[in-house]
Image (cartoon, rainbow, N blue to C red; front, side):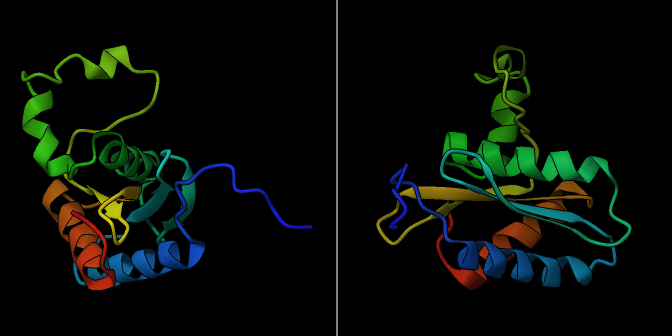
Length: 144
């Protein structure tokens, strides 16, 4: 029996694994245990990796960063100023979905430039998290 395709937004598990592996390699350079999350184009979790010793809170923050990158089709580092007193200042109180407007999340694009998912990291500083996910996205291809 063939499986029905529920959504045109597809993020293959193989891509999620490749992105996670690349981000973890970059994070290991910092020596700070982190979490890396990959969500699909609807913001639903595809893969979460928690390094040994990573803070429990980094689980939710990495997912929220990845989801935010999808919902706004932008890097969370580019959105942080808009959320800090800018046009997105009230979004946290108007949304039931957990979002994070701090560096560490990037959208994942297909070959046509369509957002098919997001990659988020949590555990390090915002700049370290951003470096890990943006570096992973560049090395694997397909991110803003």
